[in-house]
Length: 190
Image (cartoon, rainbow, N blue to C red; front, side, top):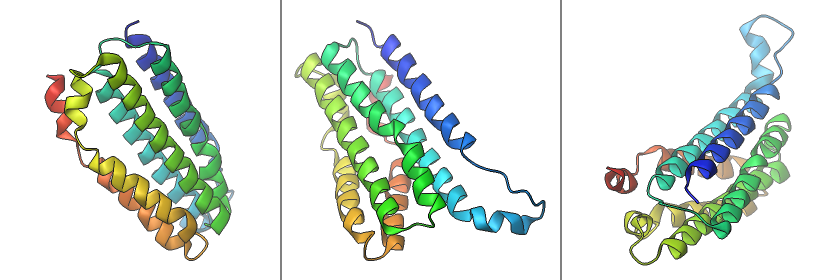
């Protein structure tokens, strides 16, 4: 089976996830700039989650351009990733609407960690299917950013019960780290 259907489905699901997140944003009833102040945590979590979803969409797109065909295991691994991504609106709203309380901040990290693990499983399923000469395997190499991300998530989850702001800084750092373009995959796409 070609990758086109899987990529189109994934694009649609991620677009729906982003749409759900923005629909959850409630406009204030007042018209002054000060009316936005109480919404600052909600707007911040929306922006952070939008960044994460954009990063996953971008990386998924580039990864699929290195894949020739998919099998059932890859389809299920992709659905597994989409499942964790589909929970982002829930944990985003929970964290933002509760002023970064420890349990919602930890839950946000758990969801990010599970999405990262699911992405790794998807990569491994593709590499296993395509064999030792997989272009994806050649492109990703040692997965340093993936390992650092997972370690930071694992640290941020319990830290949410000590200081939520440290956890949030870890989440922001991971997002900023992934915003830097990864030239390994782009180089092989050409």
